[in-house]
Length: 147
Image (cartoon, rainbow, N blue to C red; front, side):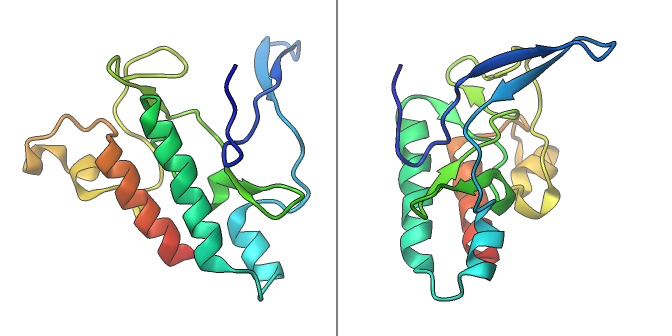
């Protein structure tokens, strides 16, 4: 199993028997919360460095063929050392399969504020409506504005 300092660690799964048998992902708790809450509470934090680390994490994902698909501050947790870690891979796809981590092919979801125009209006751009490396980069730019 590979790991990266800017990717939130996945430890395992738990089956919850709440009448519907749901699955829960297990990962370490991050007391600093997400990136936006962290920079609000730590006004003197080095925002360019935090964003560079997010970019490095995104570059790593892309290098192993993973498209995040839902990048934004609320999906970036900050560890105890103050380093951002990409999380929430529920809308991620794996190249070249273009299926979500849940296994089904899907069009991009996520919040329109962070979606590239070609994901919101794919018919205008002659696109498939699926997340791409380029749409992740657009979301990264919106995340930088958010920070």
